[in-house]
Image 1: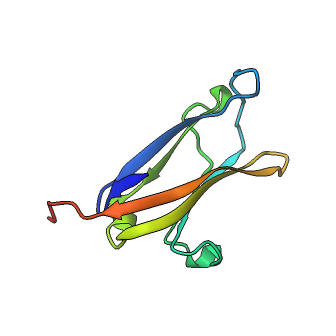
Image 2: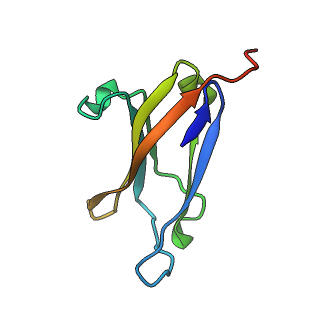
Length: 108
């Protein structure tokens, strides 16, 4: 994933079951975490966002929005993951990867 530092960005997510039917995510928590080192605690995360108010929870739709204030101090390659916690306390990491924050030209 590539993000310009100092920019806002968002991710729209749709949750589906194995049959591609949308899953009701009412009362779920979706977490987005960015760290420079994976072994560090969440208290040391560079970005830590929990979403509990979803775009259309019955249809499995949510969005994660990261404000520019959180991306502005970051530069270089970091590790991220996306995780959900269901209303029955099932926790699952469903995505993991690298996120690269690069300089933009405009710095106003």
